[in-house]
Image (cartoon, one colour):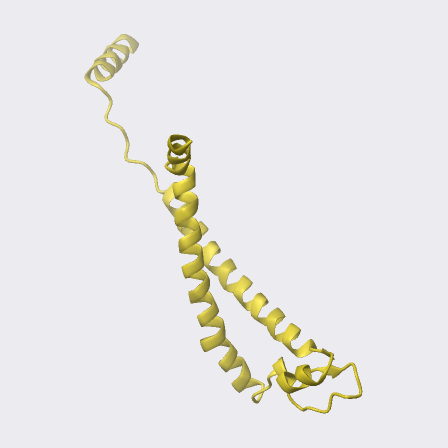
Length: 137
């Protein structure tokens, strides 16, 4: 059973998948930082510091707090602001990923479109070409 597991774990697909997951997690952290630390502050500055995260609707009369954390402690709330913030973050992350994949596809197409160096014909082919040309005369 141990031998079977080792063979399974060392297959190329499993190792490739593991590498992909690790790189994906690292890339996810980079994109999350880009959105949270670079793009969202710019959006906040442009919109005058608008922050949706503390917008909520109390679902019980006992909720009197003005921020979401305290309101959740007091009772049920509909935290639509958190949902809006996460939705905006998702759209930005999806757009950044779209740009990255688009750039990678463009590079891949350029590689495929690059013409290959012409192959030098072998000596036999050159000789046969010369014979053909002589016979045509």
